[in-house]
Amino acid sequence: MKSISTTPNFGTALKKPLLIASFVAMSSFGSLTMAAESTNQVAPSLQQLLEHVKTQLPEQEKKQALQQLTQANGNAADSWIAGDVDLVVRHENDGMTGNQGYQSWEVGAAFPIWLPGQSGAKQQLSEDYRSLQSAQTARLALMASGKIRNLVWQLKKAETTLAYRQKSHQQAQALEQLVKQRVDAGENPKMDLLMAQQVTLNAMKQLTLAEQDYRIALNAYSTWTGSEQLPKTFAEHEQSLPLAEHPDIAFLQSLQSIETEKLQLTKYSQKQNPNLYLGSKTEKSHQMSDNTMLIAQISFPLGVNKQSAIAVSEQNQNKVNADIALAKAKQQIAIDRRNAETRLQQAQQTQTLAKSQFDLSSQSVLLAKQAYQQGETSIQILLQATQQLYDNELNYRLSQLNTQQSLSDYNQAQGVSLQ
Image (cartoon, rainbow, N blue to C red):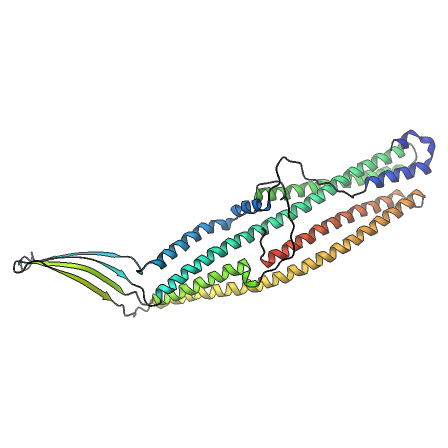
């Protein structure tokens, strides 16, 4: 570049090719550098990010409550009695009536016992809650995976755009300086400098917007992951799961099973549980010596309480709601899977088209450069062609990232969690 300003006797025909050669050399994007700010943080592993994001999910609060619920149902199912134990203490005497010295003491315990099949239903409910707990763990993993997938690709695209805008602004400044030298030397009209300055201002505007978008993406990423570094590795390949193994479906199926068992238990509760009483009684009076007896008593409710039918109807409604939620989820996931597959195919096609546009733009810049060197066109045409090249290269790079993100979205729709 110094030869342009220090050898004025070379003539315009020589200096114009030198200007273009310098400009085109600077416009090469063969190795676009990353725009992220350098930090001393060590890049986290994907597993570390997953664990951190899981702790950030609001649904995580349900996990402990579900564990307690599962444990409580397991304890209830393992019990050989169907409810609480009532301690009974009773004393009788005739001190205010016959005054024969009669006294009796009775001590015992009363408790409900299981109806036939009721204990089995309680055991099944306990198993369903264990299945729900396992399904909830898988569901949280899928939620965390979806969050990380979205955050990573948004940040990667923001980084790529920022790197491009930084490079574009630097090149615009360098071009403006070269054009200014030629204008000062009287070899180019002032209009060329004005156009170059407009290009620089536009590049600065685009850079400011890219910096803002990058900061927003980085803030979201760091808030969820606790790190400003992307994971060491993040590569996916196309995977699929049967619909029944999708974590959301498995979770809703467990809920459906729970509501079904609850309905069965509610039907049992239409008639109260038989109540067994075991105790001992001691009697004495002036006419007889102490006498101790063992007591065993069982009572069977007749089941004539019509109010219990209301509880059955309400629980049946809960079961129907669970059935509907499961059916809707299956329909929606099937649609989401088809849409994700379509978007992946479209992203791949867009990437191919973007590559073709980038290749054509490269050829256009070469032709515009030759035409400008030969004085057949103005610098405006060259600037437009070069800017189009930059834009098409950025679009191509973003289309590559969009394809990879569409692949992640496809796996997410399939219910495949990150490992």
